[in-house]
Image 1 (cartoon, rainbow, N blue to C red):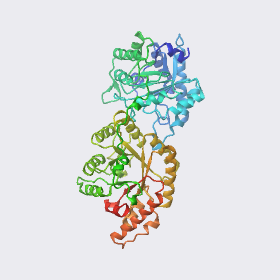
Image 2: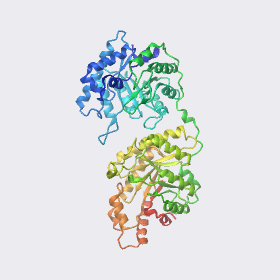
Image 3: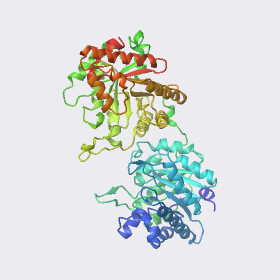
Image 4: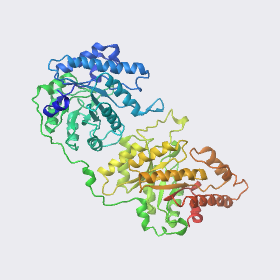
Length: 602
């Protein structure tokens, strides 16, 4: 029977976990996928056990088959091919002919051996091998984001329009994936994807938690719904140990079926006992009780817009002729120690200039400074200047980042600059480990979701860095588009000094306007103050291009004021040459000499 016809009338019972069950049976630390070529009889035995327990669907033993785990391409092809062949052979062995084989594809790491992976190419490569083996059903499972998989689903459907594709997300007990995305958002995207036939959840949580999260999701009527929970939460400190109860598991899964699930089975910790418990219960197709209305969050009315450019409308200095109507932000570096007198003196000195925002870096260059958000909170409450803390991905995982953002929001922070972050200096890496749970785009997606779920009445406005001087500008423009899609509404750049950099910045702005008419561009400015300062920035600050002609404008025998005037003149020139296309300026002033703004913007 064609699978869509089957699902219209019956609930499809899938198998349980392969990997954890294999490890339990054979007490090995090797990838179970390697058994496809070294111990095929073991693979056949496990598939057969699941079928004999009542499973009508088998997943191929290929979850971890990718280039991250198999560097030899020929070995990878062989393992995938044998995994498909064994599952197909096992499915044919049952008498009623209703066993369906799904090519099982798990997530591929974005970076392998310090190299970024072309995920689309790798996923379609796996799919092609499976298609050549006769696979027509595909299960993408345990994913944290769907953006990388939807194009692959489209590719498979273009190759075989009758292919059946199921995509499953993995979440924690609160509904968030390891990428910080709530599965509600992912399911909505999958609901609008014509290439996807079924969507749901697997792994991460036990059946009761999965039932609760599923009840919070909105599914479109034309998608089948899948649910493959873990046996329980893992326990113990050595490996993945699950103490689930098969009877309890089946009771909870039965309730999920009664809510309207179409495909059910088990993930980590489950074995044939769990599937037998499900199949022995009287289950029948139920009327769908899941929510049908998509994009519910979009109906939530935003009451405020606390972006610093909205606040700037009230700024009495906004019409100052020297500013030419541009927004002005100034970076103040938090202190290395506990004495905040200098930064607070500088922040208070900025009040008279009527600037629109103060940005505070998050331990740049991997060297500890006072927390950017806590300093932003103090600066805002003491000066009433909108504070824009940098938040980087280097030092915190998604749990800590969400916690930090919640705390910042409670304390009145409504603006942020989201960056990936500088790596930890090489000499410190033996003692200090970077986190980098994800890059800046991933963190923006977290904040985008939090704005929809938590902060919709008064959302946090966030921006991003724009590296206009990358050797390959096309890569940066592509990144810029992804950041805008992830909710970035403004971009700040490194200091600009040369005509070449201005031209590249203009090209970025042109592309930005094609993507979004609302995104704002802040041109980075730095008034260099001495020959030594200019030489240091030119030679020791990556990503900043200081031309020799500007360095040679300084001399060692200049007075302090003479050096400052050279830097002021240089900045004014850049402002004049960019006034027609940038939205504002982002000042990084050496040694916190904020008084220089008197000569620059008045």
